[in-house]
Length: 429
Image (cartoon, rainbow, N blue to C red; front, side, top):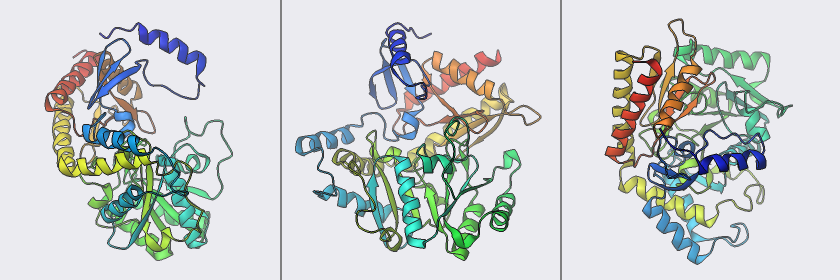
């Protein structure tokens, strides 16, 4: 079991100083980190299968990313790109325009957070179409700002006490076979929405995650994405793929949409783009991206030079270390281990799913009732043994696995042993 002494003192200070709404999952206080490992204030080692919520696909402090940031620190740290621009911003835009899904001319903009990227995608879609309504999906997560909170399809904890929500935001069910929602159900619900609540001629954008993140790592079926693309085309609606959590090799391709054979009009990205530094982007059709007037997009810290330097290095690392293939290989091993546990002693593990190394384990009883208590018990037992995991899902009954794609083989194997030991301890197996 891990010792806790300095951590306990820091936890007392946190509770006295920080707003209660800033939820904190653990009482381990980080003092150093490298690749897939964190050391806390008591010197305890944690194997990190959270990666700052999908921010560290290239691991903590990847040497190439750190070298790029240090070099930028020695040059300049801020000018505000809208005042005095810099070449690295332009270069990153050129690279992402070439890499993002879609065989058409693209342009880009950089901001700071995933929520800010989604806010700007909505602004662009509205400016380009002259329409106001936005459709998103139940279980989706798009951020905590007022617009993105309204777009998010989960009330607790994101919307509690913060109403009223932004106007002209509508939700439809997201396909989820395990919970009895088919592709046909979702598409029929969209058609019903068009008849009962909002004229499709008033819809600026449909926004979705190719794999829902907070919603439970639910992959969008290929047929759904294809037909959603056709629906958007039929009604002149901008399709926005929220790749904030799925992007940058996590799903076995640079972007999850590459697996679907159709391209969104706009792609939002953040998290692992910066390798640990804050940066986000919107990349999309040039004619849509140019709809906003000069000055309508951007922000003081948007495309900060340090984040830009980190992002250019992250793209290099993904290519040089073939992290897309690495994600697929790691995910295959994890899935096999989870399914072996399911067969041996864990029948409540109702489904193992996800592309690449974006893997989820969902827990339900024989009647199909979600088991959030079991997921949380396994998470806590793993943490007590030095493995950091996250839960997710509308019911909180899903464990998600987000280790860096750069994790060493021996550390990965150790983590899987800890996971199995934790699950056995909870089950008394």
